[in-house]
Amino acid sequence: MKTGLLFLLAATAALAQQQYDLLLRGGHLIDAKNKISAVRDVAIRDGKVAAVAAKIDPAQAFKVVDVSGLYVTPGLIDLHVHVYANSADPSAYVGDHSVYPDGFTFRAGVTSVSDAGCSGWRNFEDFKSRIIDRSKTRVFAMLNIVGSGMKGGKFEQDLNDMEAKPTAEMALRHKGLVVGVKTAHYAGPEWAPVERAVEAGTIANIPVMVDFGRAYPERSMPELVTKKLRPGDIYTHCFSGLRGELEAPGHLNPAMFAGRRRGVIFDVGHGGGSFVWRVAVPAIKEGFLPDSISTDLHTGSMNAGMKDMLNVMSKFLALGLSVDDVIARSTRNPAREIKHEELGNLSAGSPADIAVLRVEKGSFGFVDMYGARMRGSQKFLCEMTLRDGKVVYDLNGLTREDWDKLPQDYRASGSPRWDGTLGYGGGGARRKTSAETKK
Ligand SMILES: [Zn+2]
Image 1: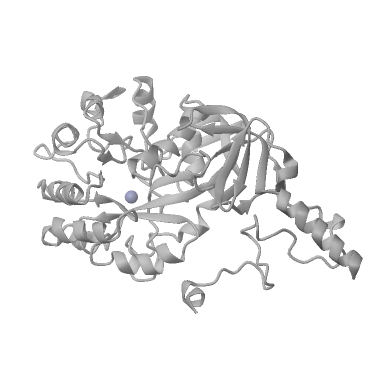
Image 2: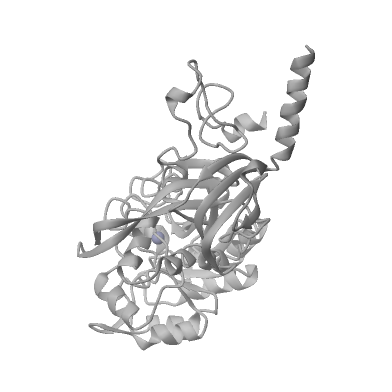
């Protein structure tokens, strides 16, 4: 009895000394906000970054993970995805074109996404209860200026359903969750979709993201980025070449630079039909880098040239950007664009959303929307992802013990203090639904 009590006291004392839940040791930290690109230890406590330093005493951590040789970055932020997955419509983004976020994010180092306009003010709260509230991924949304969102052809062309006021009201009702207003796919010559999106964005004090649909002489990309959009508004699909981004073969339209000088943001939004080497290569050569790198993830793009966030980021390594630069444009910059500056950095006190990445060297191929390939020698791979301080993805079991060193009758090996992949009440990793949690 007495020795048992002493042991318990000793164990409690040891635990008390372990002020950190998890320590990532020896990785190369890239934190653009804090201007760090160097080997650093990162300690986590209660879901937050607790300390960043050249050396942190491992005895202070409950769990230590060696990440030397790997990059430690803020969790990636993909600001253009489509995740209003449901069985409503086989051919719409409110339906089969969308994917469920958790199935596609953590494995690519992504911890936050912004759904780019799948829902409008009429169905945002349905989207919220079905997807946002049930996802482990941080899901933000840009409301479509179309009240019914991306329900397909005729809905997205209906000018009568593009209303600034109810859109802004819904955005304000869910402040922080609704991070923008989206206008997309419009095929007519009128400016109304853009103008009403900007009106809604102005009332709600959030940016507008534009997928410019079809361009017309009376509704041109130069006029959009030099006159219609406000500083901070986002022009996505910037390397599609479909709306006059090139002035002539091999030369970028000077309007792109003029838009940038006014403060308009240029985002990749790769997608199934919005990234072309013959646009991206001259753009980069002329010094026109994208402000943010994003996927435009949907069931069409993920199995074509886009694939995932890391593949799109790797394309920019192939284009000659540095690892540091690519990471900044996939973390710090998108966080700023959606006004969530608490994300996209690893300052002490920030949410411990973290990606642990490997840059593989070898012979790789990267394919654009027309099936043209660019060769490259580097590729990002996600080794581990943390969301709010919990490991939610661990490709090679960096956090794990060898099976034959565990007790013979081992069960879930780890601890809920840092592990978000296994269930610790028995029965595996199935997450409770929000309905079960409410009980
Ligand atoms: Zn899209």
